[in-house]
Length: 322
Image 1: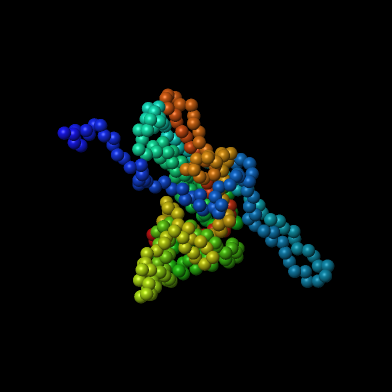
Image 2: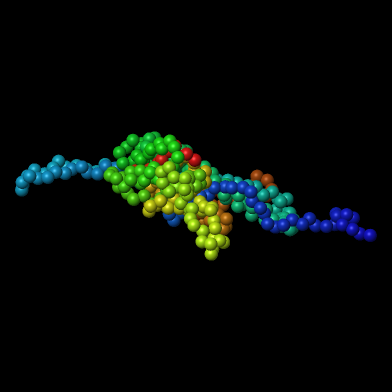
């Protein structure tokens, strides 16, 4: 009599085609500049002019025909960033290609390898940008000391506002950040805040200095008990006119506040791949001649993943309790 045990070697192994992914590779850097990556507006390397000091010539004539004030002039700087090359690769052997071609795979193995290769490139970019790492580190660009884009932050008109809070986030601290940006000489209205997920959690628990009452506490209508929800949505919030965007892997003890229009991202001479997995403009797929059987697939992105065009229009608060 045939039973399951006796015919085990004749049965196909049943594997669900749904691949569960327990990994995280960060591609959130490309969401910071409004509009995502664009072609560079000039040549190579990337340069842009910065007017750091305005003409100070001026005076009040005390009579018609009085002397003109001494002539003055503006002060200009030229910022420079050299594009970076980020890549990753995987190899498909001939025997794996044959097995896949003959239906041996329960899931899209090559597709999964390709997808993680693409996202590894993006994760490498995030590791460079969400740090103090030269040349694109956001904490290097938004700073009051050091050098960014070949210009020292001690240069008038290139230094970011910076303060060490050395404590828990409060509404007063946020008001002070905002006020600093509105006063001369920065004179902007902040519209963008970049924080860690820990800091947006701290923010969403605030109503003011010293309070322990969450802004999300409210009366639940007895007629709508199904709407009870004491959780918070960390994905996006607002402070005044500014969006607060949480980004994973950003240092969790800082708060960046400033002008989103000064953020941009540029890719160089790398046409967008038709593969949907590589959705960020500028990604390119290479298939170099293999040394043996099978094929090596290389993905690369060449460009400036984050440019802070005007660090003077940014504020960095450090020492904020996570």
